[in-house]
Length: 144
Image (spheres, one colour):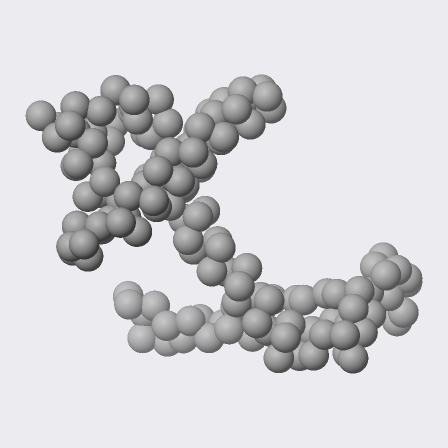
């Protein structure tokens, strides 16, 4: 089958990647299957480079996106209008930038966490400023 017949007319390479995941609760490994497509030829992008790009993607996913999902409750947001969702996401990312900047400047690495940032903001009475971009029922922000 050609790429055009498959509905991907510009694909020059395709790869199937199997990822073996160990779960703490299960004794068996789980196999995740992922397909990678690119318009670059093998001369332009080797299999090793393709794997490196995939890992870089998951680094972003587990860094920024995980932080937005967990700390800012982005996945739980029920905002319906696209413009409002976009605007709120800008504020969440700005708040996340403050968190990362604060974490990078912390001399005590044990305190250099998102929770440590919120604790510090609470101690300085900045709780209200971050209540707009964080979940409503955040235990850390509502404790006195």
